[in-house]
Image 1 (cartoon, rainbow, N blue to C red):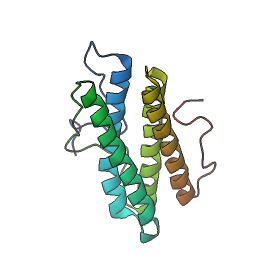
Image 2: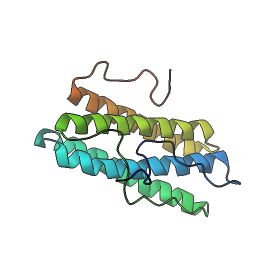
Image 3: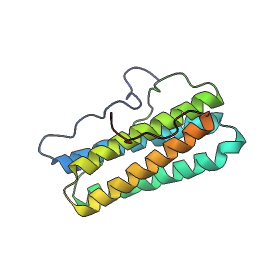
Image 4: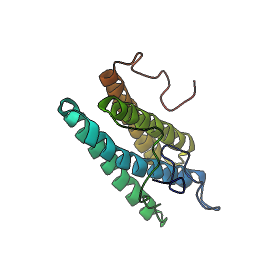
Length: 162
């Protein structure tokens, strides 16, 4: 991967001018979902069999969420951002522990993206979807933190700086 490729976990590019904040936040969250799906390919390759079920569950959640957001954007006649061919990981990943740290970070990045959608949502449906996604990301981050033996395993306010 080169520096010209999207940086993993970095703030996605803002959506084109003229889009409302709700749609822009959804587009940004979709970009994070694309990066997370890519990242779980790395996590899967380096994870021990004992966490295979966790990897599969997380990957399935993110793929479903990605597909749902693409459909939500299409219903608004908005072209969904495409996944990049590759992403620059935030750090070297060469062991099972590195992979688990990457997974926890991806889930925390997802929580941040989905919290932004909750904050900018203009409809109850968007808020409910984003709230569920935020919760799923926070729970998955806690599960990865448990794998790592990290403490505390949960964040007080997932997706925030508090």
